[in-house]
Length: 352
Image 1 (cartoon, one colour):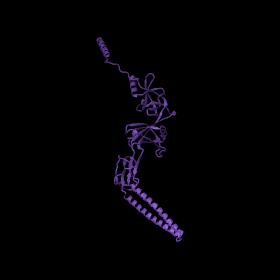
Image 2 (cartoon, rainbow, N blue to C red):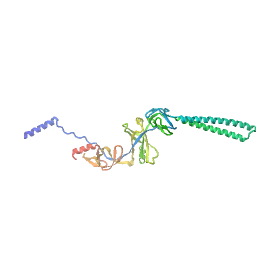
Image 3 (cartoon, helix red, strand yellow):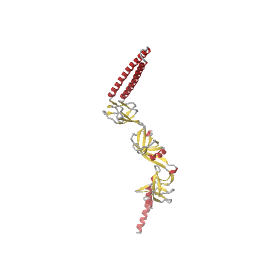
Image 4 (cartoon, helix red, strand yellow):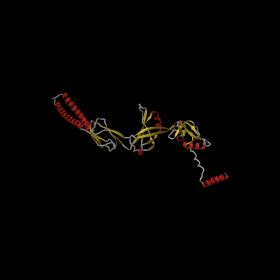
């Protein structure tokens, strides 16, 4: 028996000396943060949509059948480029009729002018009365007014005829085509939607109660999930007035050039961060230090001797993107572990 014990001790010494058996590595020290009161940041998060700063819906201005469509959705167009044509035969007939009415009014005015001049000469020779001169003058004035009215009607008919050709109001991209070849267009019927690329903004609707805080923010951070991009410090413009039905206000945020490739209608998430001021001192805990155990929320507190204890908390609202307000469970000056998983492992290892 003694021989076996001595042999076991010799073999153990051999393994230790040869480095086969090594002492376990010491765990890395826990990263901690000291809890204290400090000025907190408020935050408002809202969902928005991207829209073009310059966008227009081109509609028909006369009635008629659509006889030509030259572009489709996605087409890049220049200012004045022809987009579509509407059958102009009815408008052309109306223009011809107005031109004929102008010619007749000009003839009537010419006749009234000749009659006025003749009547004036006869009045000078005492062959007609002054009343006859007044009537000839009135007939001439009526003819001049009639000619002006006919010319205005002819101009209106010419404008209506020109509406048969639909052109692009500015250079841009066709976002949508709302009509088909052969459709009967009516005044006000949408035909195309165009937008100018490269100039985009995010439009957000927020509750009326949050507008004051957003005005204090002045800038916001925009997340564009479709582009996997986040843009910070974007100026905020709060539009005056609120919607009487939804009690919400509208906020505009112009996108910088690096986000120009985003398309109208894309989803955007906006964070407005603002300082709460001297009245906003709160007991703050880092969000990464908070551990969630089913319905229990708490942190791992590290005492002066290095002991680790789980402490249940009652939390308030977010105090910025990385902090949470503590309403109960912690005191200023206490230290909490920033990594709850590492703190739990250390707690199990120490057996506390």
